[in-house]
Image (cartoon, rainbow, N blue to C red; front, side, top):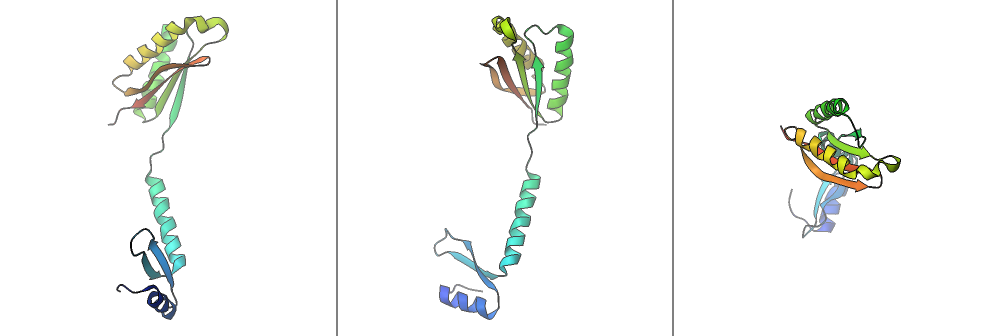
Length: 145
């Protein structure tokens, strides 16, 4: 159409029985369009829905260890972590200290660092082992394919 002063734009919208919709309020001068407002809202909702559908959802899987997890259990849980990382999920591995087992903090940290080293080809460590209360937590994110 063209560039019109606000009064002329309102008059054109009224003649066409449509609405004057402000598209870009931050522009100087503000950008407006003469369109059907309901249709505009519908299109905007449709666009937002498409953007939301394309957004990737981050899945977080947890793997729990004890400070004295034996070799077989470790291997079993490591295979699960590999599977989760291959599926594109983040892995939250943690060692849970019950009662007096908190004295084995070093063992828990060694266990988590060993897991990180074993899973190096599937994912990278996002957060190194950190003690939070009775848990020592570590996050591993999958490597991009």
